[in-house]
Every structure is written in structure tokens, then in C-alpha cells.
Image (cartoon, rainbow, N blue to C red; front, side):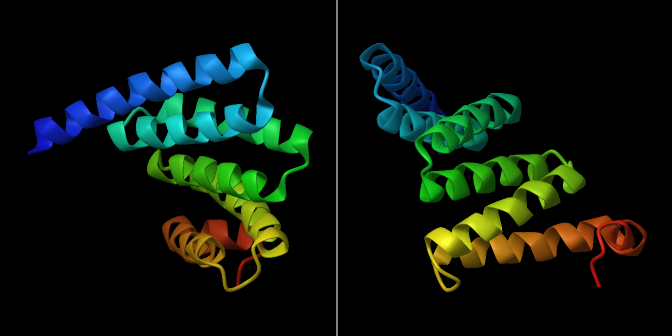
Length: 139
């Protein structure tokens, strides 16, 4: 089962890499931001966190250029999740805080993604422990 799922992710990565190439060649930033985010998710699932973070960061840059709050929130959130998975908890907290503010403004406070970000911030704070929590002014 694992190998079959792994093969599916490899195929998905190949298809998403092609989508990124096509979006770049067409100069379509909207599709490119989505394709990069999706490719990042595939890399993340495959355990290639550096490649995932690179895709998320590129997607975030495009979202900022397009002034697209929802894409920005998603890219920042995914980037934070990758930092969390690499045990980069301070960076995860920073990205999560920004993503949460953006998500609240874009999606609203009760949206599923906003709630997911809030829960991940709680996880990060638990990982940081008391000493580092005071550094972040977390009570």
C-alpha cells in the first residue's frame, strides 16, 4: 500500500511540475501561484520539506504581487507547517502568526483554515515550552 501511495505522489509531482512549467510559459501568475502551492503540498507529503518550502515561498511571493489575501494566507500557513515539521518552531510561529492574521481578514475567524492555523499555533507553543514562550510574549 505504501509503495502504491508513494508512486501516486511521484506521478502527482511530475504532473504538477509540468503545470508549473506551463503556467510560467503562459505568464499566468494566478495559476502559477496555485500550481506552486499544490506542488509544495505534494513535496511535503513525500517528505521533501526543503522543496516544499521553496514552492510555498514562491507561491507566497506571487500572492503578495497579486495582493491576493487568500493565497497569501494559504502559502504562509503551508510554509509554517513545513517549518513545524522540520522542528523550526520559532519560524513556524512567525509564519503562523502572519498567516492567521491574513486568514482572519480573508476567510473570517470561523473558517476551517483559520481554525487549523489557530490549532497549529497552540502546538507550536507547546513545543517551544515555557522559556521560549516568554521570548514570544505568549502567556
